[in-house]
Length: 104
Length: 244
Image (cartoon, rainbow over the protein chains, first blue to last red):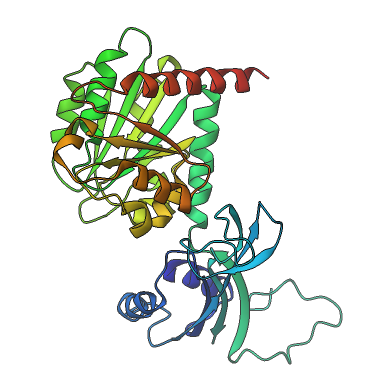
């Protein structure tokens, strides 16, 4: 993640990254707290050293293949909120992306 | 070119009053984009060679290598396999596979907990892909991280052994959601265990209604034929898809 951020910052001739914004979906498998911890450790000595990390959590949304409803998904273990079916197609919630940088 | 910011050659009307101080830039890049690009390139390579490719995933000790040993031995006259073995350390698994006569390469990830598409792309370089029907990638024993990394395979195959507890699909839903086939291994031990196999299958279908399940024992041989039929069918379909 830091490599991608540095690559974009260098392309803009920036010398420092002051903030990093990410989108993490509820079903992405990424634990935001672990990402924050790792970011602080891994950014040392890079352009992002000392940068703030903002994580936007994206709630998951599923489309039920049985009843056609769209429903919020808190985890993979919860069925359709309308009909309880587990045949849900995930529409949103698997994001794991770097979306914005603030550079100088 | 503007020597301050590297922007385009001076154009009429180009002014240098723009601010070089702190600014925001949109990036919108998936963190796994690099792995996905490499996985796609692996997939193109595998498809060009009409290879049926499986990514075998499970917790450590479920019997992935033992299933492979028996499979390679039983099918050696009908299908040509190549095997990539992923482990943190040792070449023990590769030695076991090599003893069956199949081409094998060990990838040691060191401290890494999964294989990625880059390792696989280089891992297959020594194989004769033209004469291979099935490439099996045995991932590092881990039910968490390998779920997120596409290697360019046709299917993830999750192995679960009956000594592990029937609720594994609920505890590690991402893996069982990513897999197309689940092999329930060591069923010869069922009489000695309190493992509810129907409950296990229902948990797996809860996280993945489409997952196919085969119950087998690579020790007694029970259920292995159904796995072999699934493999042969996959090879056939891959070849037909290529021809179309």
